[in-house]
Amino acid sequence: MVDFILKTLDLSKNFGGITAINNANVEIPYKGVTGIIGPNGAGKTTFFNLLSGFLRPTSGKIIFENRDITNLKPHKIARAGLSRSFQIANLFPNMTIEETVLIPLLSSSNANYKSIKALRKRTYHLLQSIELEQRKNTLVKDLTQGELKILDLIRAVSSEPKLLLLDEPFAGLGHQTIIQLTKIIAELRKKTTVIIIEHKLRELLNLVDRIIVVNFGVIIADDLPEQIIKNQDVIDSYLGKEELK
Image 1 (cartoon, helix red, strand yellow):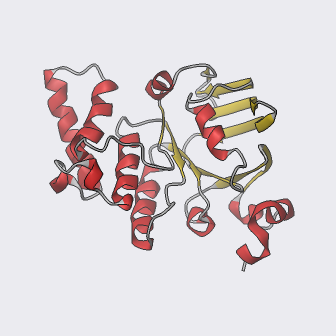
Image 2: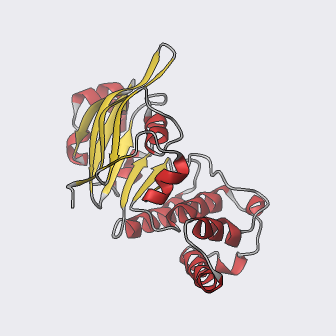
Image 3: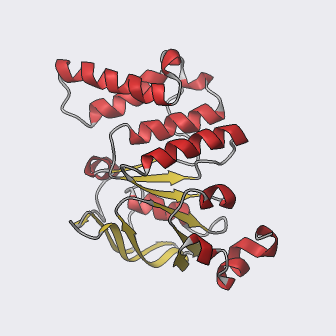
């Protein structure tokens, strides 16, 4: 087994004359949770889009489980075991809750009549874990923002990915929903590797083993959480003195 589930080698992305990601070299170890923080527009979501195949890099490489996935399409990257959620839950409004979780399972397996029954059972257990099993026939458009975020997360993990990318999972959520989502992510870390982009630093610190800080497309720090909050470059560029009180 290789030491790292994911590596990027001098990964860069330019949009015209703007460099969104500049020679990013990242190594993500197996298991555990890594946080990514930085100001708005720093390049965090662009980085996720590169990893998941929604954007192609200008230069550099992405290595996932010792395999070069740099120019693979999103569905092939997903089948390789890398899944993601989005800042805004990108779910079909007229699908039911059950269909939203079941369809990715069907598309990721060689389903037959016997396996469909098993996949429905797995879908039920997944919905049960977020207390939505009794509402499986509810349409996605009738869910609250918090329920959409949690359903999007469960959809992303339904195929049991090896690496899960979560893009601002706590954005727009109330305190109780954040607590619920934190518990789900804490359970996920036992069996998969997780990378989280998040602005809610206090909640993030309770989850992560390490933090990567991005500013103007450049990684300016990569360290343990207790070191990151004391890093002067990070304080100056992102945290600010008030954030540490």
